[in-house]
Image (tube, rainbow, N blue to C red; front, top):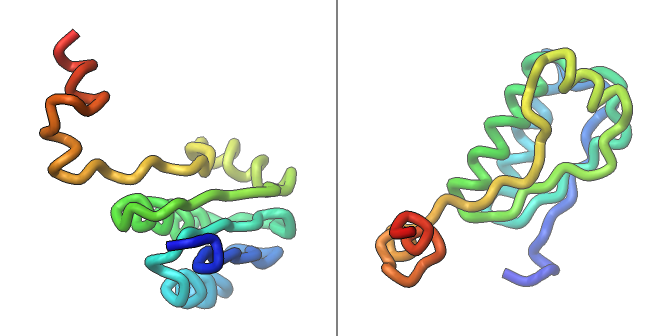
Length: 113
């Protein structure tokens, strides 16, 4: 996929029980494409909002697609700290079976050393 297939999703200011349904629908609409999530407008992040974002990050990794959170607001990063949640950094795609068993792959070389 090229850069034209990439999607950007701007998060709403409040990510709580009332907004996660819409967020989930927005995420489903762009599944299978590289995704940039703009968190600059977030003023309140609830537990369900965080859960949806963490599930999305895992889904994008399983689909071997880039997932990145950019421009996090202070309220967004503060909420992550309060939840004791991992920072929503991009996750490396899960290795496919060929890479995982390839003796010349970086992972296999590291295991031999």
